[in-house]
Length: 164
Image 1 (cartoon, helix red, strand yellow):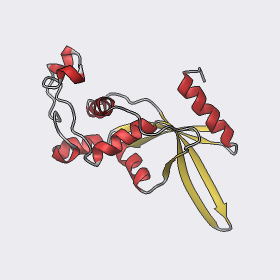
Image 2: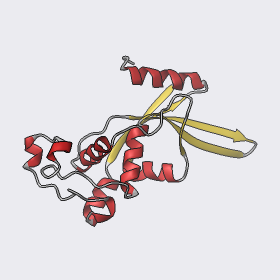
Image 3: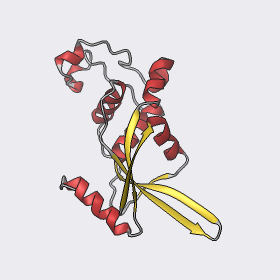
């Protein structure tokens, strides 16, 4: 197995998804299970500049004669990718740390900070904040292996918290 770390932006990952180059393997990936609260908090974290956990992608390259097809299967990070994509598509508005205190449950120091994206969907954001979201870095690990069982094993280890 070969593992190559790389930095992509939210924009890059959304482009992979929209071009259908980012796929989910239903053999070991579950459906979209994150709550609305988790999705909103992830986007809030991105906008605050917090580092997001690694996203693992299995790079699959197939050739047929002179033709080459390349795609990426999500090993770990599907819920994060879905949340970023749904926000970009306008599926939900973000928390206001003060007004949504009961549901959001942000710590006090967050409630005292300015939050120009409070109660906003993506299309409501200023151009500067939109750019900040789309240009936010995401740390990706591209896995290359000729044995798909290695990718499955990595998924199981990541999900169980097993040391790698």
